Length: 142
Image 1 (spheres, one colour):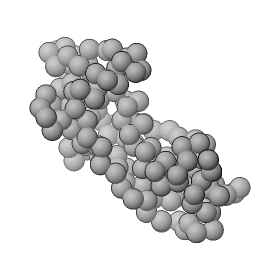
Image 2: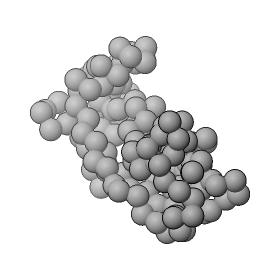
Image 3: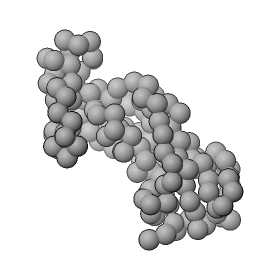
């Protein structure tokens, strides 16, 4: 599969379609099983609060993975993402109810690079707080 977006069709400032990603405690348990990360801060409310967290929190790598979905959905090929990095700025607190939490992600093309690549800057928010900082992906376009 190759990128469905063409380099010539993209300008600096191009906004990608935003994404809204719900997270529940059940989501975190499934992710723990898939990732092997069973740290109790991700499923045990009592433990999370004892170590100073506001509630059970989503795995950082889960949050990072949900955010990049905005880019992979836009480009049409996950393999087109050639670099991706973030700083974890705030945890995504996940309350123990049906609604859980929501990660809201927006992104835009920040720089056009050589070799049909662009840098996309992402903004990930949850509960009105920025949860990822310096969230950037380099994407190989067609």
